[in-house]
Length: 66
Image (tube, rainbow, N blue to C red):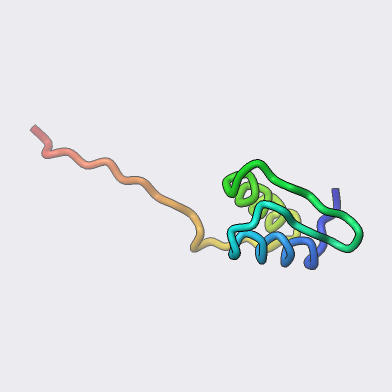
């Protein structure tokens, strides 16, 4: 599916307000959770070429070397 900047903006606005329902023109979608919305937002950003390098998460494991 080809996403638009307007669809992404509407989704981001809903995420920011805590809403689970997003309206876009004559359509309305209700998501199950904020997590589902956040995952879709990342999918949309990638599809629109809006990758953010700073958004990556790194986990480090350390040991005392015993």
